[in-house]
Amino acid sequence: MDLEPVTIGREIIVLEETTSTNDVVRQMAAGDWPEGLVVFAEHQTAGRGQHGKLWDSAGGKGLCFSILLQPQLAIKDSGRLTSWAARTVAATIEFQCLLKASIKEPNDVFVSGRKVAGVLVEMCARPRAPYVAILGIGLNVNQTSSDFPEQLRDRAISLAMVRRGRLNRHQLAVELLRNLDRTYHEVGA
Image (cartoon, rainbow, N blue to C red; front, side, top):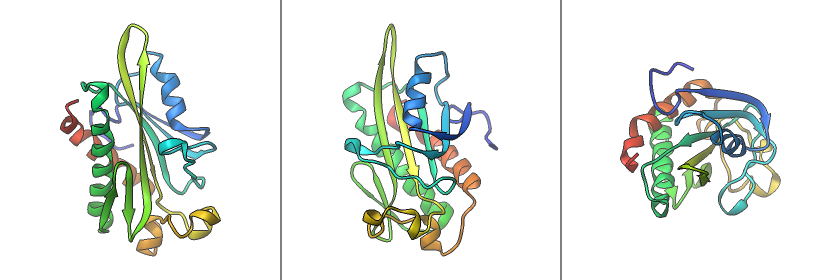
């Protein structure tokens, strides 16, 4: 990806398929990976959202990724990470796609009254080391209505459905990572 020296995005891994990018980053957090590691997956077989809900991801059409963070926050304040990430996703959609985006607290981003993105933050304790936060983001980019399960078609939407045309996922991913990195300090990181 075309990123300058940063915290978020200093290391980027793209997987063809995995269960969940949050699971991959959780495993990597036990190693010596730097803060800001980003893991993308073209397809997740067991992506998840808040309260254990499934996050459906049609292969190669959305952005599904997780970021390893080491915020300087008390664990009780971890909700600030969710709010920051949802605000940043919404702002990126508005600026890059010229679409009005709103946030349904605490973690959903809506466009045209339907869910286009979700944010999941999982806190992870590590032995003899500071805790980490794993920030997962799922953003519907180029899906069509038929890419969503029947039960979600009236509640989910993609940016391409609203714009009536495909978007460049790579460019959108770069801009989203830049915005997340640029605003990370807002949560006291």
